[in-house]
Image (cartoon, rainbow, N blue to C red; front, top):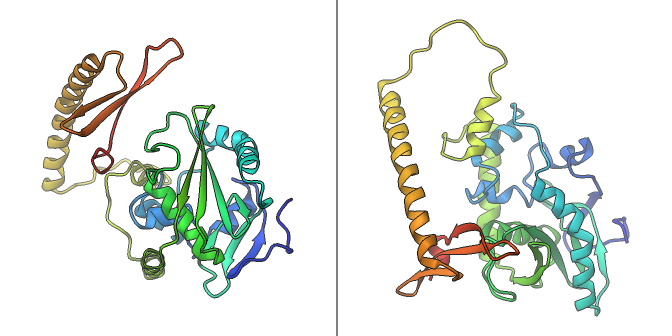
Length: 300
């Protein structure tokens, strides 16, 4: 079933169904609104966007063009297959395709859940390596996806537990439950409203270390003038120190990664006194594909 005006949710108003990357899709996500995929950036938790890059987008300044990554491309291709697996495992309700919604009382709050299912919703993901995803059924999954699903629940008023269905590496299917938390939802709404107020007032966020911030700054100039620009001495000191530290850290990281990988051997995880440090992903022949670090909060 495709999205239609027949779909009704407690607090959601259906705007339509749009192809990712299309002008209609961009329009539904643009302007002074916060979507479910943007709320993590507002909170400083997104791996793809920063507050700085999102602020520029909402303020109408130049931003890097949308590019469909390989992970996103395969995620779109696998979406129907993952949905089919979820439907087979949970036949008690039909799994409905849907579109972009806004909250009936807060039109700046928008969301595009992948599927509606009974009293809740289902968000579908694809992860090539499974980084950040814990065992099937656990509460270990990337925090930015929790933000996304919680925002979807809050927008549509579907407050029953939601499901995250993920396919890892093309064959490992897992499911996770996302509980609605009214206090967290309130904090997210407050942060989103303050962020949009900053956009209106022209209060640009500070430059941070996110790649999305750097890429946004790169597209701001629209030409080049043959002139020198004097920059602060303090910035120059940071520049010199950062480049020297980067060179030293890069060599040390390569060395310690090799040492950890050598110690793991044919094992799966490197641990120390109960703390998980890193884990191996492997090729079909058992050789190492990558050595992935555990984030400190996931390492216990």
